[in-house]
Amino acid sequence: MRELVAEIGRAGVFAGRILVSLVPQRGSFADLVRQIYSIGGRTVPIVAVGGLFVGLVMSLQGYRTLSTFGASNALGTLLGLTLYRELGPVLTALLFCGRAGSSIAAELGLMRATDQIAALSMMAIDPVRKAVVPRFLAGVVAVPLLTAVFCAFAIFGGYVQAVHVLGIDAGHYWSGLQGSVSLVNDYGQAFTKALVFGAVTSLIATYAGYHAEPTIEGTSRATTQAVVSGSLMVLFLDFLLSALLY
Amino acid sequence: MRFEFGVGAFILMGFACALALAFASTDARGRVGGETYAVTARFSNLGELKLRAPVKVAGVKIGEVSGIRLDPERYDAIVTMQVARAAGELPVDSSASIYTSGLLGERYVGVSPGGDPETLGDGDEIVMTQSAIVLEQLIGKFMFGNAKDLGDKPADSAAPAETKEIP
Image (cartoon, rainbow over all chains, first blue to last red; front, top):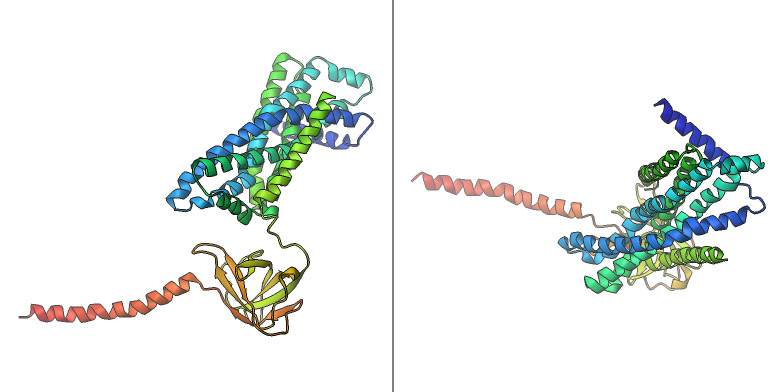
């Protein structure tokens, strides 16, 4: 119990250090761009494929439920609302945690284990500013963009399944979306959640990696912690945000 | 160089997806753009009318409900609607009613234009209104009306049954 409280305290101090180091410096933009590529850009394929299949399967399963009420034309509405309010940001954040969070923690853990972080401090370069902040910021930028990619592919997958396989009228599908999905409440909620999830998962991943024990086991533990704590935190915050933003 | 192109492609793709989604799959396009003016109307019962419900003339959306409040003296609901200037001006003797789209659909305000040459301006009130039809009240009236008949019947049917048993 004491250890858990201390852990939360350390994470808070770490978050404070990141916030203080957010002030841009020479060269920090190039670091950020490099990290956006390796964290965000290379996560696009998995998020796109994931979104496509989520759209396909939700369309199929939603049709099964709605057709018992004779309301299968409301499939577009069902898909849009579930996607924006819930599945889009959450599944993207979970995929991001597994794909990018683990690699952030492993990289920082290895930098710690091979004394690169100590070397940076030795050269009077703040390791938080040089190694942590670009990764954190890249996560904050990447997750909302990835959520947009995920939702686009899911809506497209849902469209293909609904219109070309299940035979729902294309007009019903799109008007169901345009008529019932609110730009501010539903669509906005997706990106509010995505922004929070991006910040939290990257914070946990960088924290786990930066504070890893400087051993092989420490690095592997940090990777596991980044994925497990990050995913749990996403699910917990999702409930909290849903209750607040409802 | 390679990753710079990758970053650019990633960011452009993300924003393109977000923009396409906003227009293809949300109500962004249906929002009433351009200049609007406010019109109010009093109703004795709104049913489930909500904020941002559509205001329609002849089934075509011309605006949306922007405010709902209770008149503390007359206990009427006062509904404020933003109507697009582009939809033309409504005559002062127009009437507003609350309808339901479909059997289970959402409530909307339907406006039937009158014939007066004078038109409604910003902040004017539509005087002739018809409240929402609340399904429970209809069912209640129906059941209450029938309950009286049902109450009488057992007495009538019980009496002949007894007379039959006597002989």
